[in-house]
Length: 227
Image 1 (tube, rainbow, N blue to C red):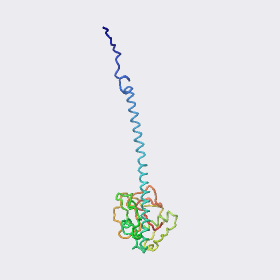
Image 2: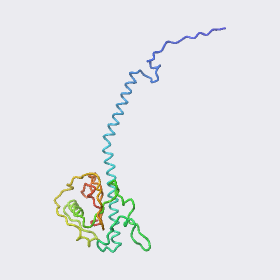
Image 3: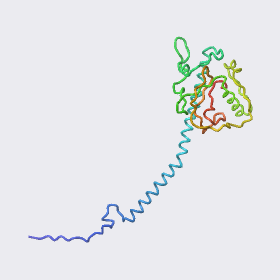
Image 4: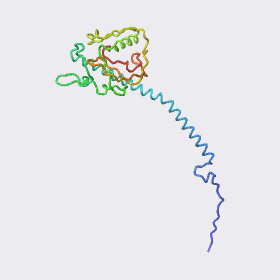
């Protein structure tokens, strides 16, 4: 009977590349870990630097949507006023619900405002602030539009000429832009009661973009008066 001899190979160093599962010495693994941490730190740094830009872009998109919706509300006010014979203040809407209900067309109702447009995308409440025809803010809007156009006072558009006498007159056209510091937060005061001729955001923040040279959300007044 043959006896097979088994020879043991040379002992392996536990720290040798062949004995560990990582293909390298502990020193090499340490370098790899340091490099990985450095890369992760750079990624985190780039993310922090990009965050303000991302937030600014998100706000810009909300502002564009607010302008789009606000102008739709202004168009709806025009349609509502015309459908009610354009007979002064009594022909203006008194609530957003009236605009959402639409205007008579034969035996049916014609929709003049989308439900999404009835909500302000810039404020937490989503509620537009209603601007009455005698609001001093309309005079400030006229002032801003006059400055923006280089000194030309905007004319009241048809069919709202019979409301022109109600609109407060501007008192100063020497300003070169919005001079009031934005307090931030939202305006939680009640909207003006009665008929309204426009809407504005409840956000009291500075804007990323300007609307006719105006850089505060709550001073963007969307009205059919000057369109």
